[in-house]
Amino acid sequence: IPQKGVIPMESFYQTDEDAESAMTSLYERFLQQMATCRVIGTMIYTPWVFAFNLPGDDIYAACKSYGDNDFQGSIDEFRFDASADIISCLYQHSYNVIYGCNLITDHFKYGESATKDRVISEARILRAWCHMILAIGFNDPPLVDHVLAGDEKPSNYEGGHKGLLEWCAQECEEAAQYLRERSSTSDKDGAVVVTKGFAY
Image (tube, rainbow, N blue to C red; front, side):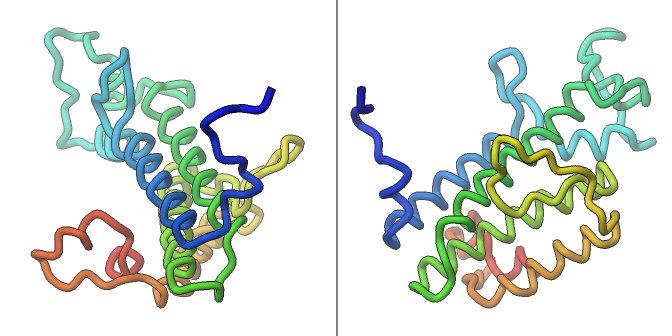
């Protein structure tokens, strides 16, 4: 039975409006996946911030009593492995955002319009940022620069940690030319999108 109220994927990635809509969806995905994490039905933490800050000597995962909030305490006290909620969320959510980026970069091409050029570039920058976060946390995780087929099983990046960070930098350098610049500190619209400043 044909689905009602949906746009078929085959006819979606066409116009500038489609590009803007896809980018809006990607920003929402980024917000839900990287800026917060749902635990017990509530958005309560930012995985990458917690993963990289809780192990610090000057951070204490405070709670009502010892053992409460242990998903944070285990990171704070180095009692965690890859199955820890914060660590697995960081890894999975990063690739979820990368998937959204790849939907855009796979379906739109440079040179068709200024809007599409900008949208492709914003997606490339967010994809590079997620790969950078993954490289910082996991050394040489898979580089995923396209929507994966069901039978693809990417492995650790062959270029290693340094190579992956260099790829991230190159993506930012190449894509920055198509991005908007934030006009000033009072430019609120420029504070909530990927700009040249964010890329640099």
